[in-house]
Length: 322
Image (cartoon, rainbow, N blue to C red; front, top):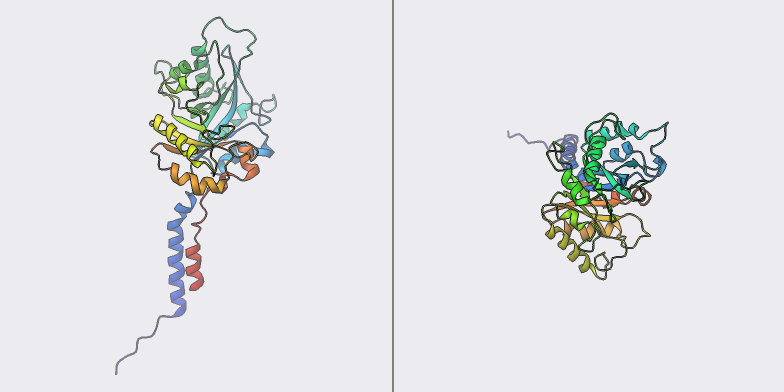
């Protein structure tokens, strides 16, 4: 007498489906977690309650680069840190950020320091002090000096956001010195943030040195010839192409304001769906640069750039049907 094969037990089948679904979830988890664009962000001009501590910023895992804003450089090559009320008092010196900086770096997040210029030096020098400034920057921020303004740290780069005309500090020479092996063993990565109008006349001489590594091109403010509008998107994409093609060896980030009140603001959905898919095809596309962390938190901007559509919905459907 022939035997009749019994159908698989329904509970066993359910177990197999759930197990398979779990494996799929693990497999897709990397795709889900890496669905945010690489981002740089400016931090340091608001308090801990407004933009979070540096540790909190890095623990958010939203950013690949955090730019400390800012270092006030005077025309005599002296400088001081202005990081709002994050630090800077006798009770809370900025050297207390050392552990947070190292924590960020341990997470694989780069930490840059950004230069702002105060030209009102008390005693302007009579000659070029650019080399002195370069050596002072190296000593304070790039040599693990325990007496540095941020303690014993070696930061990952120097950012030059804006450079007004200066008689005694020559910015092209500065970035050249910071790449000179007779002055420093390892080149210091340099970033600058030009306006989207090409060329940025103030920053162009710095770019021509060949020592700039990152561009955060600011596609906002009143620049109708290059900011994005849904009516005339071509001017934006043409400007992006001009920057990326003009400097193919430099990693270019799309500079975005997270402040809805600033001209050139682009809502995150438009950035994610209409802009990033097109500009990310550029060979030297790096990601997005957010101005700044306070507005980013206030408007929940960078999290909305993340692609959360691939959130395991297929897997949940399989489990539900099982």
